[in-house]
Length: 182
Length: 123
Image (cartoon, rainbow over all chains, first blue to last red):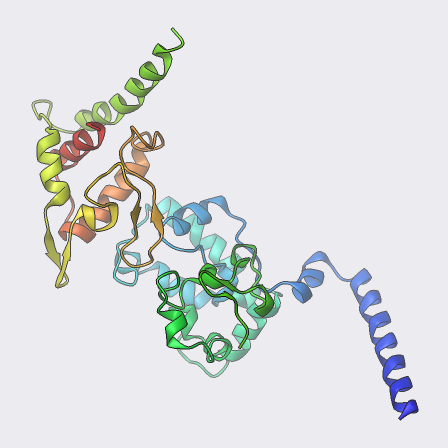
């Protein structure tokens, strides 16, 4: 038993050393990929244009093909008209293409891409990705139906640091409920 | 003079859009806040749903509204309580286009847009 504890400790020490070394060598993106979920939105135009009606979903939550599909149908954007002038559209398309899940190193973007490997059609909704469904499978309807929540599309109704691209379970805070742990 | 300044600023802010709109429309067109109010509250049926400007913006443009689907807060539309409104022509064009199509199922006429602007400025 003693040997086991000792070797576990030794192993984790080696692990920590390895982590530190790798951390020192890798670039900033790689470092952040460990601690946070998705690259936060950095483009003020994207924030303004997409964020005036709903939470500005970080591009790293869907692959480029999904964003492409979505942006050609903005006149019927989930039942709303969200048409843009061609110049704005082009700029947003470039931002989405460069920051989509398939070109991101962030942990949750990788997980979303991994969960989509057997899906042929790029999903239009983040909530349709298998990774998302899996992560939210234990949330009861009564929580989703709360007036402050309403649907699973309202990331920031529960994830208080969603705007920073952080979706950790221990950061969940629901109005009227408080901390949530499933 | 110091007391006058806000009034002058407000006048400039609220006068801009009408000037901009009347440049593109028939010069003889005249706008009415009363007609704007009626349009604001008129109910249209689009995609089987009853819709009006008030659906999201409430019947009182001085009040904050809420996006019908996403529930996101919409700041008041009346420039008297929200001075950021009606100062950016391209923003106004964008939202008139989108919201007229959603609410009325078509784009609005210059007359309708001008009337609504008069209504919003009447508060």
